[in-house]
Length: 110
Length: 111
Image 1: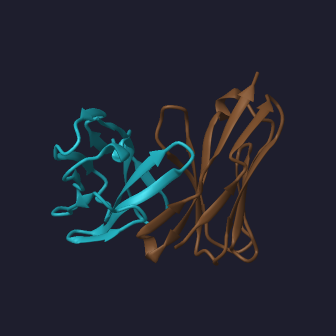
Image 2: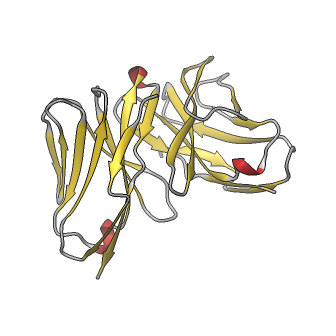
């Protein structure tokens, strides 16, 4: 089944403790991206990658890192999480015509 | 930066009524995509529009792309409770790299 898999689905962590949210796709897509969703603000792009070893900033990249060492994986790294990074995070992959989203990771930073 | 404005933010309708959400951009778009997110779910791709003036239909849903390729709309005829959710438009920039979403329109349908 074609899908984008994110882990974990839920995560509560403390300020400053490094964490990684994983994202994997099995559709051989070149494009992958991370979004955060906050009430009233919609979906905002954090980072995107158009191919292996190619990443670029979206609209809200501060406080996040990504890597694209292989085509299927695109982890999101929070080196020092802060409470304002509490949000619902989505990974997406696709080509020009339509993107497939993962089920989301609800992150709470206390 | 690039922005896509979407209105209204909320729409409450009685089942059977029609619903429309609108997206506008200050710049010409190469294409526009529409997604639906059910409550508690993730965005699901509905359709992509590419050509100026393009109109596409999916059952009760009609999607339009403006002649100037700066605006788009989604119209649902005779809403049903299964239509509940948030509808997003999204514009593609940088040859596929940047997909910028509108703020979304949350649709609620009263039976």
